[in-house]
Structures are given as structure tokens and as C-alpha cells.
Figure 1 (cartoon, rainbow, N blue to C red):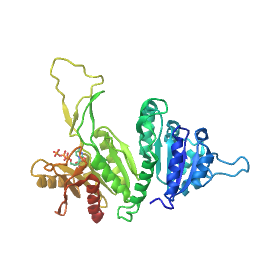
Figure 2: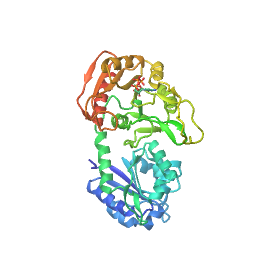
Figure 3: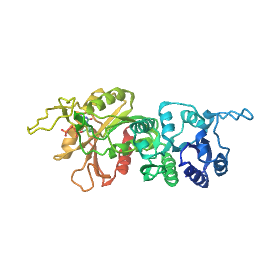
Figure 4: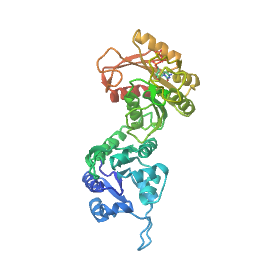
Length: 402
Ligand code: CTP
């Protein structure tokens, strides 16, 4: 799978730099062509000689060779690579990547890279948990970089927690998965701009409390992933979930409330070829949001709720002839009839009806059983499948109408 793939490995100054040696060795064994860039500090952790020997290529550290004036062209490196793996990635390097700082060769190559970028953070647990680092990781995810989340275990600091760099085997696996998916192209979805909503929305009651639902976001993320693997450019507008995006073709737009999701969807939909609305949008929000935490009292508390706007219906009324719009439905009675009405009301081209009857379906599960209904009165029933397989089925249908 990795044979003849050009993999650029970026190594930063972390104690986990020794794992880069294992990673490079494994990549070369898989017959990938490997070039290595190190930050100046990384040299304190592992020698360029080791990595040059393992990668079978000179290791690059500086912008130019002081001896002979040779220029190490980061643009060429960025264009050369089929994938750029930054492992280990320190908090410092990720902060610079998130802000476009380009003060070493590894970072300039990052800014120039046209290929997918895989980032394997490694640091102490408190550094990783710091809001600044979490924010930077979220920014990198929004750029479409793939974050290989650190593992939990013993850390160089002597503490135990999350922060250990992902094992080289797992990084190689992620690369293989990426390259195997790319093989599925050509698809009619290649190059299409598609908006996907996913996850729940959170409607604040006061600064610490909110109303939400059990949506895990898995179905929406699986769809976004499947779309991107077929070459679509995906804007994923998502409420809070613990899902990770798994493809650089996905741009994540995180939101909290239905109002934020509404605004993002309305401004972005006109530039899209279509949208699939998977989010479990809260139907109601508290009418008043308390500025301070509501104190406990022995009195009953009544929350006044007001309806949220219907994002689907808003997009349905904006839909142009060359765009499609689709959504999901979960119905407890007269499922098909209600779903068809919903499709009409929201001006969907098709609607995916989730079963409530079967075991293994619904919120928080890895599987789903769907019936796809379209505006031409077609009804397609599918057996219980994983959410990834369900996503593939939906895209197979989508290809016939796009
Ligand atoms: N939807 C949306 N915005 C909302 C509510 C729903 O975009 N405010 C979308 C969902 O993402 C889904 C579809 O509309 O694709 C149907 O959602 P559902 O909750 O079943 O629809 P409702 O209009 O809320 O109908 P119900 O009365 O059954 O709750």
C-alpha cells in the first residue's frame, strides 16, 4: 500500500523523537520513499545521522547548507510529498502550525504542503490538556490535518496520563488506510462541495448548563469521511462530539447552538453543490440565558423554551436547481408517511429514515438500519449495517442524482 509513496517525516524536539526512527524504519520496510526534516532542537534528541541512515536520504534541518550555500527548497518538499507526517509534534510546533509561523524548515514545508498532513502530538499530560494546546489542535483539525491522538500511559515527566505519541505501527496503519481509500476514486462526487451537519446542538441555560441530546455525531462524521474519501470537499458543521475527522478533505466548523449552526449553514450553502443534514438540532432553546449560574433554591424552577429555527427548511427554501438537499428522520409512528411529509416540508431531494424498532440502531450505536425515500417516490430499505457502510450506501444513491 505504501510502495513508492513519498512520505515526508517531520521530527520535532521531543523525547518521543526516538519513535520517529522506528516509524521511518517501518515506512522504508513498506517500500515508501522517505525524506526527513528535523527542527534544530530535535537534533538534541536523536541524531540526523541515525535518521539519514534509516531513511536512506540526507536529513534536512536548515534553510540552506552553510558550507556550500545549497538551498533546501521547502516548496519542492511540500510538492514532492504524498503525505507529510509530523511525529512527534510538540506543543510549540503545533502552536506555530496553527498560527502560520514559519521560522524553521519543518514549518515552511508545512505551509507549502499540498498533501495530507498527519500530526502525532507528544507531550506532558498537562501541556496536552491546556486550553491553548486543545485550541491549537482544534485549529489544525479545522485546517483538515489529521491528528493522531496521543495515547495514555507513562510519560517522560514521570507522570501518567494522555500525551504519549501514537505508536509507529498505528501511524503506518493510518497512512495505509488513507492511501487505500484514495484508490476508490473516480466518483461523481469528486471535486463537489458538500456541506454536512452532524452531532447535537447545545442550548445554554446559564454559563454552566445546557439542553442537549444523545447524538454522538458518528453518522454525520461517517458520511463526511465517505464523501471526502470519494474526493468531495466537505464542510462539516458539527455540534460538540468526541469524533475525530479522518480526512484532509474535510473542513470542520465547530458550533455549539442551533443558532450558530443556522448561521454557518445559511452563509455556506449558496457556495455548495449540496448538503446532507444529519445533526440532531435541538427543537427548543431556553428563552432567556442567565448571565450567572442559577443558584439552587427550594422553589420549583420553570424554564421557558422557545423554538429554534429549522435549518433544513431554511436551506430548502434557498435551494437552487443545481443543488441537492437531504436530511435524516427518526419517527416513532407512521414512519414512512411522516418521513415523506418531512421531506416535502423541508424541500429535500431524499430523506434517510432511521429505524427505531431494531436493536443496534439510533443514538450512540455503531450501527444503523435505514430506509431511503426520495422525491420520486422511491423507497429503498437496507439491512442493519455499520455507520460507515450506511454512509457508503447513501453515497451510492447520491451518485445517481448528482
Ligand atoms: N433539522 C434541521 N434544523 C432543525 C431541525 C431539524 O436542520 N431545527 C434537520 C435535521 O438535521 C434532519 C431533519 O431536519 O435532517 C429532520 O429532523 P427532525 O428532528 O426529524 O425534524 P423536525 O422538523 O424537528 O420534526 P419533528 O417534529 O419530528 O421533531
